[in-house]
Amino acid sequence: MKSAVSLLRNRLGFARLHAKASSLERFGLEHLRGNPLEQIKSAYNSDFYIPKCRFMQYVRAGDTDKRLGMVSENGSKMIELSGKTCAAPDMLSFIHQKYCMKSLMESAKYMDVEDVKPDLRLLPPIDSPGKIIGVGCNYYDSCNERNIKVPKAPEFFVKFGTSITGALDNIRAHQIAKRIDYGCELAVVIGKKCRHVSRVAAMSCVFGYMIAQDINARDWNVFLGGQTMLGKSLDTFCPLGPIIVHKSHVPDVNNLWIKTIVNGEERQCGNTKNMIFKIDYLIHRLSQFMTLCPGDIILTGTPAGAGAYRNPSSYLKPGDMVESEIQKLGKMRNKVVNPYF
Image 1: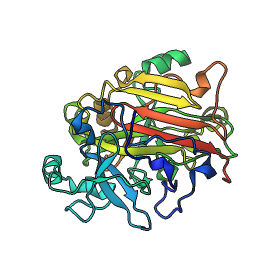
Image 2: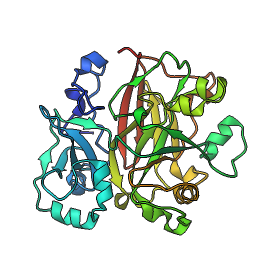
Image 3: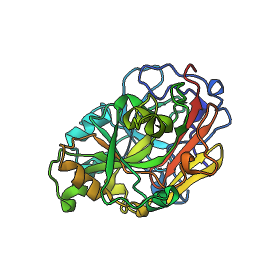
């Protein structure tokens, strides 16, 4: 599969706006040449090269300003929205604007389309959400591998914004965590404020979708007193990205395949159709207890194949490469490093 650009060939300071870029060799990623923004799709499809409502946050080389852009499905072409439209320069503010996607796509026909520059620094699609809420054991195959009954109601947990890192950034293997696990999840981004919303109206509250890795310190989550919040909220334990795809480009969110590959070995291969509690129910349920706001993130669970439930168990360690992919949403590559790297 060919791609016109490789974001990995250059610098890797993607996670934080003011972080300095570092060479691939320093991170041991010199063998990677893929584009995390690209999709697996026929190159003969002309729409594959047209920027759509697939939003990314980034910083240009030699700049410190966060920018917002739209990218094509193959990750090679982009349109910068910042300063060229009425769109806000960052994703969270843009969601609050409630911009009309149809009008945006019409305007995009008259905007300059450019190549995604190789020195562009990719940022997390959202870096300061009000809430990150996850749901545990939300796939039938996950219940089967754990030998537990299918839950009658979803069990929620929280992660904090300081755990967010980017699609190409490192996951730090903190010394306080000995059993670090992975779990690729479909992340739902809320598009408007909602409270006591019905299931019928729930999907109207969605802005779009992205990939998340729910990195989890199992020893704190289970073995050391059930400290779920601590085990899931360590710094860098929530890789997000590489983009947010607007819901209009995901016609059937309940039929997307999900994969996690660790060091070249496929560990997870599932499908969102196997969710126990669908997205509309999760939004409905949560909104009975709290107000969901634009930019809030809901992690919808992970399919079977987590390291803790393999035989033997297989936890992440420094040097491991975790690749996450969801159909239509792109891919992430995160290397596990020691905490002082």
